[in-house]
Length: 396
Image (cartoon, rainbow, N blue to C red; front, side, top):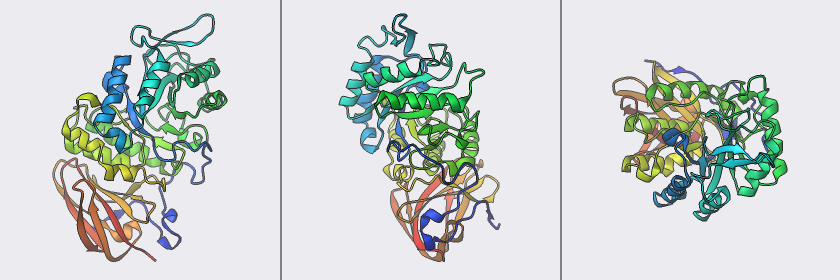
């Protein structure tokens, strides 16, 4: 069956920067000029696996595991504590108070420990009056919270949007950005308002990443739904500002290994932040191999900073995704969303390559597949992906 082209790719006479991405967001968006998040942030967040069961011992154990598992060396940097670390505000100073039972050493000492492991430290708060779990929010306390985080050595802050009735998202997050700047410490700013206020239209220059959807769940249907919604805003993303389809569920048990490989591959194609959400202290070899696949990570972290997109759909639920890379090659994901194995082909003409020979490398098998003229086809397992890197002559 003839492939239906969903997106087009221009000729490469003016290099890969001319590739046409999907509509949505601004192609020339203003970015933050602080040299942070020039590639999508990578790290770990406590929420998906541990929810409110956070503690000093947990965070130290996660930091240790990020080192021993090879995740740190693969590029993961941030260890982020999500909701439930805070219990109150000091009545005299207004400063946020960490749970003294769960974090007896205090946040400054915990940040120092994380830093000692060659990692960076992150904390969660909410732009509204309370956090999503009912803890004190940062509304009307942005400046003191930003100063407190700077004193504690925080490198990343995730800011949620619960209990924000009547507030203006753009205004509140801009105010929070200004507070972080005034505090004087470089901090990656993660805007988490779930795409409710179309952040892809205004968050560039406000935050370094912004959620495009509601929360992910550890199931195939959630992954697919978020993929489709987040992919619509590819033109908003670029160095210093990224669409965030939410954290990874790899290793949490609700999907198969094939589905997790697809999840990880498509997040990489979309230049999404790679924030692990599993218990990395006790992950299986399969989970570790997925999360530390350096060839797939290199696609996500490519310095050109283009978010990939759906380029063709040979049949319903058989998809070809492409992401242009700095060296002129293309990362391609052949994605089978059906219930049976299926052959999927990528045509060179769909990804801006001339019809002659091009070399193909399988990024999950870690092997060169050879030279192919005009197209490459592979049998893709149900709910699975074949991810390749293709190097060929640009189309004229």
